[in-house]
Structure formats: structure tokens, C-alpha cells
Image (cartoon, rainbow, N blue to C red; front, top):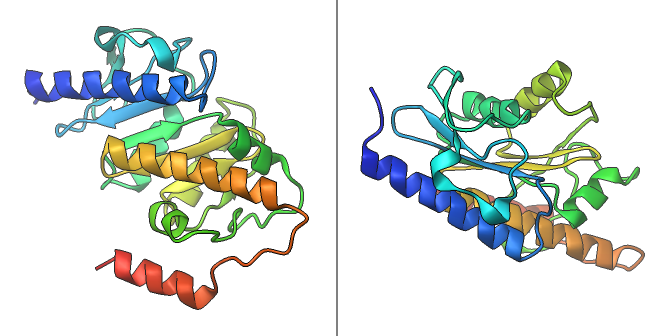
Length: 216
């Protein structure tokens, strides 16, 4: 079974539009970062290797079968497995965004963060869109061990931060994944701005109340 032409066309156009928006606002640069959308058939469309998110051609996106086999479009990114790991462990997800966004990467390099939850709950919107953010240890891009580490973390978290690399965020829709990634980047920026200051993050009780309300 293949996706309908209208569904696939909309997905291709949406990936290109989100990529341009992210690039134009400086959340990615050069040919870094990648975006994918999973179609109703289980097939996946993904930004190809060596492509700028600011100048994507919808017709040239890499296409994968439901089993993760490259079936069309340009050569896929070597980071395709990051997306496939998220879809495998989070079957409810319809899109994944992976960036090398500056402030998120900066936080991923700090030595004194909690690997189980890298950023404190500074705002309600961070808790709602991102939740708890685990740190995946550093592995070279494309390493099998990185895939295994991401898969292990993705079972409990729809957003993970790769050490010395950047965030990988899954969402029910492309908009959900995009907004969560942007909220993560903004919270990372706030966290860095506030380092050295006495801060007042949300309490655990406040955080749990937000999480419980969001799950209803």
C-alpha cells in the first residue's frame, strides 16, 4: 500500500516549509539538521544528505519503505537511523526533527548537567512540549552504538539530547515536533543566560500538575 498523492504532496511541501522557517531563523545552518514525516502507510519522507534545510526541493526528498529501506529520492542522510529509532520506539509519532541548534548543542557539552534530565523546568511551556530531556552519551555520527543509545532513551522520552551533537525530537505531527524543538532551543538559551544566577525553576509539584493536565 502506498500513500495517496495528496497526502504525500502535502507532507513534502510541509517539510520544505518547516525547513526554510527553521533555517531562516538561524536554528540550523549549512547542511546540518534533518526532518522526516511518516505517512499513514508507514512510509517515511526525509531530508536527504548534504541538503540545506533552507533550500529543500520537495520532489527530491529521500523516501523510505515502512521497513526503513530507501526506495526513492536523493541519497539519504547518514542520520536517518536517528529518525527510524524514534519511530520504532514511539509508534504514535508522525514526524521527527533533528537539529544542531547552537544553544541546545552548547548545553549538551556542559559537564555538570543531569544526564537523566538535562534542563530544569524553567517554564510551563517547556514542560508541556518537551518534558524530561535525557542526554545520550557521545558516539560518532552514524555509529551503531548511537542508534542503540537513542533507542533506549526514546522508550520513555519523545525528545533526547545527543552529547556534543544536538536534539532529536519526535511529535505526533510535524508541527508538534517543530514546536517542541524550538521550545527546547529557547529553554537551552534561557538556561545558559541564567547560569551563575539564583534561579527559581518550577517545583516538582508544579511540574507534575502540568504533566497530569496535559495527559487528559
